[in-house]
Length: 389
Image (cartoon, rainbow, N blue to C red; front, side):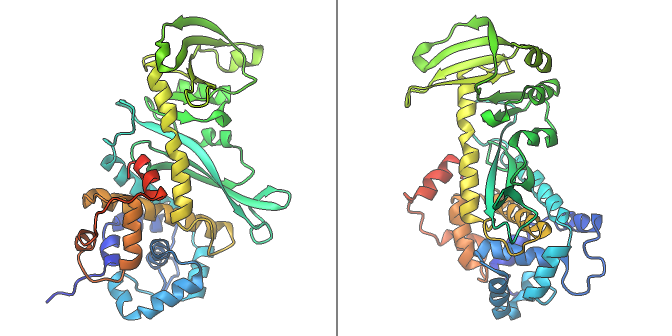
């Protein structure tokens, strides 16, 4: 009778091993490595993400207890705290960054038809960043303020499925708007941003790349109305205009006349103004697109609560970036499994089940079929419903 692989082995079987070997070879990750390979390192760190391990010693203890099962789980090297720490410090973090991009490329078509509240044929992304506070004495490279350290994750999730398609990890001092310089704009795609990204020269670069943006206006940018279109004020809309930026600097950095939609928030009574450069999009859809941007806030909150990116296993820049990219890879891998196995559970529920079932030797579908599908009313479930999970 064949031996049933562990749930952890079945999860890792969804990894594109050829892509991983290509990423390792690109940066000579396994050069001069005799026992503990890059795959062993990835498996250890992915195990830590799935089972919520708190430290390197915690990882070592849990895996050594299951030593007889490790070979069948894919581990080929002996797991030790010092070896894993050295690997995190020395092996190029770009191996795992590139591999995360390979997983994202697999996840993208699986979530292509997800609904996010706006009838839109083109891709739509939300751009924002989140800050993870660090102790400056332990992480001196991650300067943020005079006595505080931090890293900032500049992230671009697809609004269909909240799959991050661009991530840049910087110290806490990098301004949000500089992420636009690193972004390769996709022609025809919509980029939804908060007021922190209002910088006319960079927005015009998006416009020249034939990409579209929806952004919240901020004070200090002067413009005049060129043309107004009629709106249905009962929907909350107040104006749908074509505008021209005024002032010598503004008119030179953004010479093309964009559109502007103004909306009165029925909850607070305040008015929100959204410059946008797509005139074919109905004014109310501009408002809905910006409302969908809230998904990125929920995404940041969710990954901070359920992935290990707030407590780090190493203090060097390489170790921190390695951990973040493997956390992203684990998140995307579980999202891929959810679609390929057609699991109806939320991503939160899937991770909770996997955290206690990784050493079980039963088919992974059986693990989820044994779950009582009683609807949950927890705050996490409500948030993840908004995220489409």
